[in-house]
Length: 367
Image 1: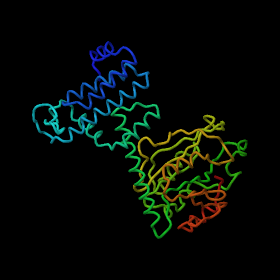
Image 2 (image 1 turned 180 degrees about the vertical axis):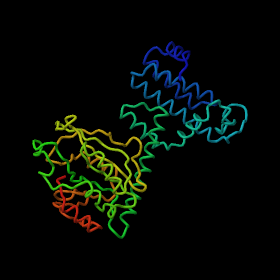
Image 3 (image 1 turned 90 degrees about the vertical axis):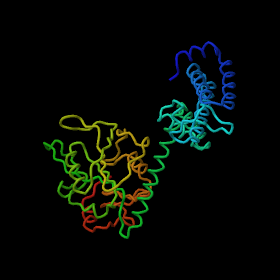
Image 4 (image 1 turned 120 degrees about the horizontal axis):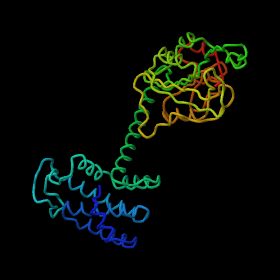
């Protein structure tokens, strides 16, 4: 937080953009010549004031941010040289650049000191890349923003490594197993009168009762650590949850497909469909900041066909895990295997369980 006296003083001393750019030249020189923590702190505060006062002038804003980042990293580098708890005096840098005081003697809160040190530990190339990405995205390159971005990148990398390791374990199994299963069961839904009979799923493909769907031996093709994506229409929500449990998965969340045209319904005119996500074992969730929105708008295609966007979502979440689509119509999607009455079978799509193969082949619906 910049003090009001500092803002007033800087506004009076630096009244123009030209003066601000000249002041930044001086601040950069002061960073190089700094001998004490206080020198750096004062330089950073003036740079922050300039960035606040000239927020709409990109040249000033960027250079001021750079001064703050550089000064903060300098403090962090000096703090790294001091053992925790030491209280050496005076509060200045030694001739070799060593800060001869204890970390606590700076007066910087513990969490702030830790942040300064973390920023100092960021390699120069990684810092430049992160700053460039932040600015390209229209974001400020403050120390906090830089560290947050680097932390998010680290989480994304860690999650990608976990997903790849899980894929490798599944691929190494002697019996074909899948880390991702997408199912669009042929739900049977009864209408109240014959007037709605032309909309029945039974008129488009053979359907199954809830007990038949629950009895599918999905566990025989599911890896120990597996994600299940299950499509269901809104009236079938309780049944979908029951199927997730029957197949050995735990419900996690759902996505909503908002359609570009309104359908029918008794209590409302339905314009959306649900894609449930369940897991078993240890399936890595997406890294923070990489999750898709829970509501996705997409056009309606042929009867029961699902939008491309949801396949892309699954592939984005699990690029390496072996995937299979049950109740598939036509050839398997590239990178997937498929099972279904009209699916073009691929290696592994014969499935580990003959009973599941027979059942899914006997009750196929378009996808």
